[in-house]
Every structure is written in structure tokens, then in C-alpha cells.
Image (cartoon, rainbow, N blue to C red; front, side):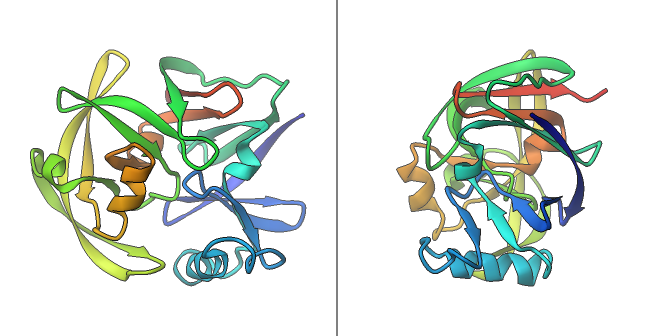
Length: 223
């Protein structure tokens, strides 16, 4: 079965309406979190409250990687659409330009990219909708490109210094801003075998197909 969801992009988070539920799609979260199970999931209640406070008070569910396990999910930011299929059904990006093997499942989606000429592991996290992050000594090799305001359930709102770094996608280099990774976040990213987190830097530039069962991430050019 193929479902095409019209999507509300609230602070660049993907929010869909499905079976009466207003669900935030978040590839950086391992779990599906809602009011029924939030007390049984690690930090579930905190993350759900934070999403309602800072993104949309009507959110009823976080849909993380539990939801992705047996599905293919295509994010199309420019069409404001999320396309979800069962694993046996086909969905593809329009103009594929790069495919990456992914690791880190079932807790994270980790892929390898060439950043500023060096091979680095990154977590793909659609919840990173305001800033992408990378460890400080890598971020500061880039070109300073301003600041932004972000938020985190345990840190509240804070200011992020941004640095532009070239990321190789297929045969092209794209300059993407990265923030210095907060100290609170750094150990969790390291534990996943990565040095940073990217979300908005990918899906604003490309269609992104997440295919967890086949352990691949496919990027396509927008029409």
C-alpha cells in the first residue's frame, strides 16, 4: 500500500495527519511515542511535551524508527509531502543522484559522507529541522555563516554558531551550514559511531528516501 500524506511543515518539521492522529515524523527518534506509551519509553513524556510546546500543541504522536522498520518513507520537502509504502511496494526519488548504505539501526540512521574532503559518519535526523550539527573541531574548519536559535528538551532554547562545510552528494559538492554540536548531544552521537547530525541540510536540498529494511538512503534532485 502507498500513502501520500499532505504534510504541514511546522518549523521545518514534517507533520502528517493519519487515522485521526497528528504525527511528527522523526528519524532521529528510535521509538513511536504517544500518550498511551510515553511513560514506558526513555524520555518519552519529555520529548512529547517538548514537541507540543515548541513545534505544534496538536501533535499526538512521535513516529520514529519503530514506524520505519518495515516501510519505505520518502520525504519531499518542496512538495510538502511524505510518501509511505509497505516494504514490498515501490517508491523512488524522481532524479536519483546518490545512494548511501546505512548502519546504526534500529536506534539511528547512520551514513557516510565526504565532508570538507574527509569521510565522516552522520546521523540522518529529520528532527534536526533548524540546524545540522557536527563536533566542534570539525565545524570550526568551515566558514562562519551566522547564528540561529534552536531548542532541545533538556537544554531549552539556545543560540547556535553556524559554519559552512562542503558535503559531497553524488558528483556535486553542496555547502551546508553546521552548528557546533552541544556537549549534551555529543556522547549520544559518538555512541552511534557518528560525528554529527544532519536533517534540514539534506531534505531542503534533495528528496530523501529512507529504506531501513534494505539499509539504504537514496537522495534525488528536486524537479
